[in-house]
Image 1: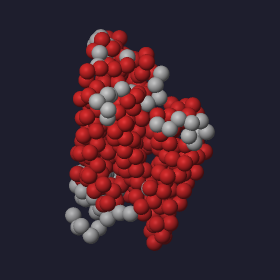
Image 2 (image 1 turned 180 degrees about the vertical axis):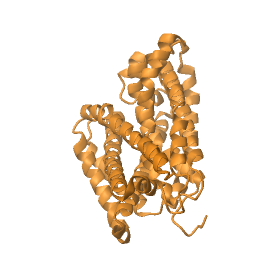
Image 3 (image 1 turned 30 degrees about the vertical axis):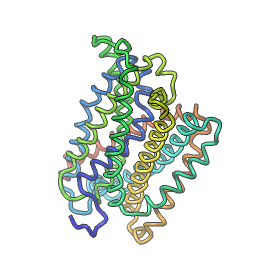
Image 4 (image 1 turned 60 degrees about the vertical axis):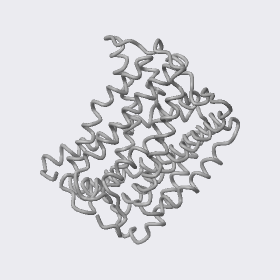
Length: 363
C-alpha cells in the first residue's frame, strides 16, 4: 500500500473498528440488555455472536468488486444508481452526523453522572468537540495509528479491571442454562447487536482501505466485541446481580469504583476516565471522517473544501448533541427508541443493497 496516500491497511481498519466501538459497548453493556434478559444477559452476548459474522460477510460481499478508492458509498451508488445511491448515502450521512452528536451527548452525560455530579454536560461536549478538530481534519492514517497505539493500553485497563474484580464475583447471580434462560437471552441479544452496529457506519471508511476483502477485518472486530460484551455482562451481573444492575446507569464504572487496592482507588478511576476519552475520541473522529467522505462522494465539488466540510459535520454533530436530549432521562429514552430503530434501518439498507446488487449483477 502506498504510504503517501491517506489510507489504512485492513489490519488498522479492524483495530480502529474495535477500539471505536468500545465507546458504545462500555456505555450500553449490559445496560438495557439486562432488563430483557435478566441474569442470562451473558448468554445474550454469546447469542449475538451468531449473526455478527453474517454482517461481516455481507459487507465483504458488497465490497468484493470494489476498485481502489471505492468504498461502501461507491458500491451503493453503483448498485442503486446515481439518484438512488446518492439518496442512500445521504441518509447514512445524516444518521452518522446525528449519531456523532449522540456520542458527544452520551459521553458528557457519563462524566456528569459518574464523575462530576451536578455539572453541566455542555462544557464536556464543547471540550470533546474541540479535541476532535484535528481528528476530523487530519488523515485517516493518523487515526488508524492512534488506534494501534491505544489498543494495548486499553487491553491492559480491561485486564486490570477484570482481574481485580474476580474476588467480588458471585456465580449464584448468573442464571443456569435452561430453556427459560435461553428465551430471556434471545430477548436481550438485539440490544447488544444494536450497540455493535456502529461498525456499519464506519464501513464507509473502506474507500481509504487497502484493496482486498473486507469480511475479515469486520469479522475480527465483531468477534472481539462480542466476546468482550459477554465478559462485561458476566463480571457486572456476577458482581451486583441482575436486579441491582438494571438500576445503575453505568454499572461497569461502579464496578471499577468498588476495586480497592491499597490507596490507589483514585488512580483506578483516572484510568477508566482516560479510557472513556480515548474511545470517544477515536469513535467521533472515525464517524466524522466517514461523514465527510460520504458528502464529498455525493458532491465531488466539495472535495476541494474537505476541511470546511469536516468542520461543518463537527458543528452539526455538536448542535444535534445539544438538542437531542435535554436531560439524562430523555437521553436514555433516545437510546431505547430512536438509536436501535435507526441502527436496524441502516442494516436493512445494506441487506437491500445486497439483494438489488445480486439482481442487477453489480456485486
